[in-house]
Length: 313
Ligand SMILES: Nc1ncnc2c1ncn2[C@@H]1O[C@H](COP(=O)(O)OP(=O)(O)OP(=O)(O)O)[C@@H](O)[C@H]1O
Ligand SMILES: [Mg+2]
Image 1: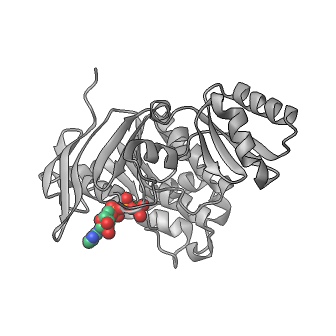
Image 2: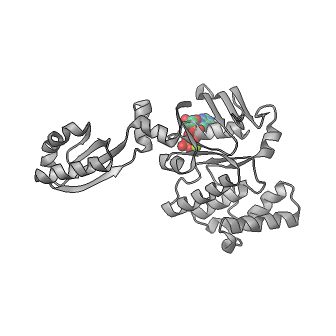
Image 3: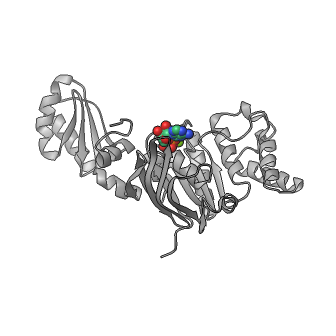
């Protein structure tokens, strides 16, 4: 087995009396994408900030390629790229100027910095708007530029903190392609997200953190198996049919929900849906809508914590 490129053991971070990271342990192997999933305030950004030397941890150890984040911050900074949760690019500069500036800060010559900026603008489909000020960019364009800025010097490990939060589905897809491309070039990536779907699309492995602790770990499929299978969402046309519907479907599995909106664990996938449609049709119970739904982050959270992702105990 290969040695992990990123090794974090029992990482602790306190702000005042509050322990925000309560012993985070994780490993990332070379070329892997690790998804760090968790709700608001879970400690995702704090973890990333400790690993990227922006914050000093209060306990535990973290190394990247053998370098310690506390003892060798300079060495770490030379190896990594970071796209933070909030934009790092300057709105008053153009996209090209921003990238050239990053290149110059990395001690590239003027000519090299310009060449690198042009290559990145092309790669991230920003070449046409390269001479526009960034403050006129849409959120998706800005995120792409942010990502481009974090790979001006191609990093060994790239940290992406919620790269697609707030983007529309199309911009999100576009950014996913960029991330896949970076992975295919062998860059090891740690990506935080609030969306299971995103981790599902991009991550080889996922850790779920809640209140500063790792509460689950595995591939997307393994996490979903903890939740059970797909759900069949049943929307009846009439509220008054709710109880009869429950009786008719009782043998298929546990039914959740109330009123005309019911949810059934579809252990047999499409076959469960077909059975539901057939039985309700035979009983003369009209449907407003019916669909299959894959487990969401909320479902995973519920299964591993006993509370929803958004709620605090
Ligand atoms: N500089 C700080 N001082 C005090 N408390 C902080 C500081 N930074 C973060 N926290 C607290 O630490 C906890 C974890 O915050 P963090 O930003 O790591 O969460 P997150 O998982 O990134 O959340 P989000 O999804 O909202 O970005 C939160 O309760 C937050 O209020
Ligand atoms: Mg955050």
